Structures are given as structure tokens and as C-alpha cells.
Image (cartoon, rainbow, N blue to C red; front, side):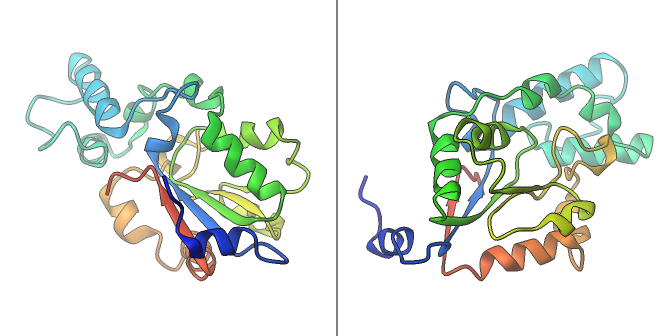
Amino acid sequence: MTLPPELLRAISAEGGCQVAFVLGAGCSFEAPTALPLSRHLALECHRTLVEHGILDEGDCADPSDLSLVADAVFAKHGSQDELVRRMPRDAFANAEPNNGYRSAAALLRERAVCDVITLNFDLAIDHALSFVSARGDVAVISAPSDISRLRARNVVHLHGDVRSSEDDWVLRTEQIEEQWRDGWEQLMTIRVMTTPVVVFAGLCT
């Protein structure tokens, strides 16, 4: 695979911090992280929700869409915690970083990359920072209370992470489409999207 010349120039630019990454679920699929993609996770969660009587067949228009599964659970119970409880939270918390995450962490440590936004709930990128001894150089931002710790280089869990309370996981359609506006998520998105070069990886849409 040939990298675009503008990306190579930005990565090697004097002073660094000309590049930001936006990472989706596909980045956690590769071993050894080996976490399920959103579609598989949605179908399995929907199956167990129906099995345990939390949802009825037909409550969700598309059980392969995790946001629609979350919408259905919230509409019926006023909370999405029944869905979050059925996710592989231990696997998310203990996710081993694959080579992609280790490379992203190394680029952060070397100041070639200024920010990594992840839309995933797992902690693989956090563990990658430890793997390359970058935890002292990079801030991890997962909630508005973390903004005061913002640094020149950051990992941002834009949708929350496995440590967030169940209803703070950004899963539902309304949360994704509307609730981020005018909040800390919008501030972080603007910060990243005004970086000279933004690389998107592992996104399904």
C-alpha cells in the first residue's frame, strides 16, 4: 500500500503534530485485539435481549444495527443499561493492542500525531500507550471532566469507554446525531478536524 505524499510530508514535518487519527470498530478487529465488529455485536446482544425478555421480536427494526438496538431498549425501559450489560465489557477493558494501535501510540509519542479520536469503547489504544511508554506524554480524555487535562497530544474516547456509566455510552441514534452538538464532543471534533491532515481508519460508514 502506497501512502499519499501529503500524509508522508505531514508525518515527517518539522515540529510534528500535523496529523490526527479517527478510529472506528474495524481497528479493534485485528488480532490480538480481536473484538467483534458492530454488526456481530448488535446481533448477539439482540439475541440475548430477546432471550431474556428485555426485548420482543419486532421491537427493533434492524437487529444488526447497534444504535437501533440501543434505541429499542431505551424506548422500552428508559435506559440502555440492559444492552451495555450484555456487551463484552471485560474484553473491552483488557483489550490487547494490535500492531495498528501500537503504531498509533508510537506516532503520538514521537509527536508525529497530535490526537487520536476513537469511537470504540475498548481500551486497546490506552494499553498501547503503556506498551510504548507514552502514558506520561499523552492525555486520555473520555468525559467532560477530563478536558482540564487536555495536552498537546491526546487520545479521545469520543463515545465514552468501558469505564463510563451505562447510560453515558454513546450508542443511541439521538446521542450520535444530536446530543454531541455544543458539548465537549463538538469541541474535540473541531480540534481534530482542523488538523492539517486527518486519517480515518476502521470506520464502516
